[in-house]
Length: 253
Image (tube, rainbow, N blue to C red; front, side):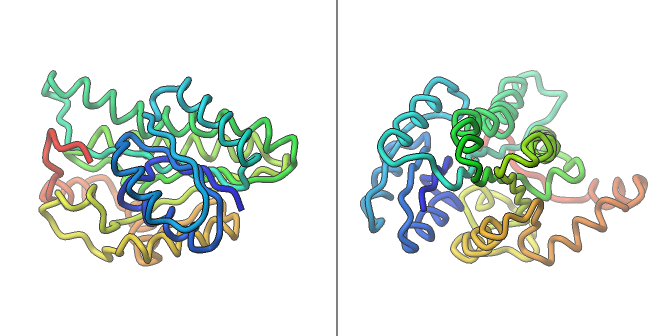
């Protein structure tokens, strides 16, 4: 199996790379942190390609995709996992650039990750495009407006893409994680229910991808929470989440 994965240098991306490499997959691993990326590849069995890049750079992604397909062929799975999470407040003008950065990475970066592969996948008549969203995209989380907005938009985008590709043989898989034990959650100074180790989460993600599930919440307990959040009346939601802990501003992860 051939897999192209962004956000591969740490957290769930690194855990997915390790999981798939142990299964014998050939990987194209993309990430901003070049040193961590090459250190990871040195630990993996098999032959893989590294692409130090930022997913907001469409040209870099197109170049990486072309190189991967020339070396290894069209991937069976493309996983748009790259993402950043940071606290933001609308009243702070200094957060404007941060807000834009979060949306550009978590939403536009996802689209730019898929784009170079869709034509080849459609021509072959098969493939999986996997977008890593978040339960935080279900309702707006105070202090994380940029992150919630980007993940809500990602969920809607993936749904639209799924329907666009219906009948082509290319499946779109949306994964909405709850709390996963990664550097992104390490800065959260508040309770994180049903927190999953990254390696366990990677195994569950891989099962959802193999099934071709259109939408999966992982862990399953968060699926119950998600359903409750969707139907919770606004006054009750507001009262509960006004007291919730907030992600620190200025800590990109």
